[in-house]
Image (cartoon, rainbow, N blue to C red; front, top):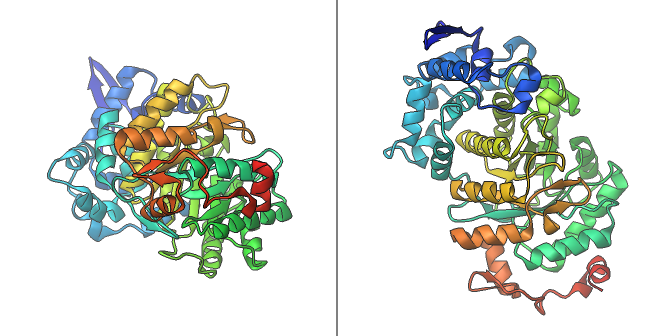
Length: 465
């Protein structure tokens, strides 16, 4: 391990190991301060970044921030490292890696070829040396394409998760939100419901409602009820119409244990979902959600900064080739990301690191009602991520989730982003929108087409009537 010390303005700054260095180099955020690992001053932060810039990338591979012997995520990272892919960048320092990523001579294909050799710690480290515009510029080079019933992540496309949550899982209320979203072109990423309870029968009822609506209108999209993976496994065994298997994941074994999961359970769930063969243009069937602060909130952070741990969650995700990965960036609260500025930085970091590690990254641009953030902040973050090439965002009626009680982005926000940046839905979904009369010349028609009668579906009929 190189000496981790630097002299700034006559003061020597020493860092006790890799995780101390990475934490001190992080931009300010309330979660790291809560954990007592943030830089003590701006000067110390700059000193850490000076050292980090000169650190060989290989040093991050050789010094895991969570011990190999006690953490299966570390073992996954180390044992699965692709030395051949790493060879293209193995000679670089972290600062040199930043310059390589930003170089005009290095395109998305070159970065994608090196991606299997990039560890989460490398991705997190280089992000700490980057300005927001650097994170945007590199992420924009990268397109990660996945497929189930449509094709997600192509350049020039923006998909939307239609999130029709309801506080009592009432089918008519859920159906009303689905209808609202479809009329505004949302739903090509997934129509995904967070169930209000973990009741297996209620979850199965929602799955059948989603499948009934999809089949009635021959929609080329996928559905998901975001139940715990053990419930999804049981529903697969019962023959329920499961398209995607969902699970929240984190960057340490202990935090995942707090979620009631481990890697073996995720593999079992993936195999079970794949066995249904419900995809048409592909079989990418996993959907993961993450968020900075989850390890700290579970007291499972091992003294590592929350952004590095978030990147480690992406190592879990990429080992399962998911259809969708979503960082729910401001959901945990201001204890972890205090205000709009911190949420914006975290959103860009997560999107950059996820794409760098080969993931189809979406962002739930959100905040809780006690955070120092508002709709202007989400507008700004939305636009920044659109420029960065975000794969998908959330579409929620009025941007206000009445079940989870947080603020996110609306169907109108997705229309805005598609309009100002010239983005389009997934190609198969776009063709369906046009064929059914919801879209004309690439724009939403703005009225209920004759081909989408509410009375086709009993729940839609009740919602519309």
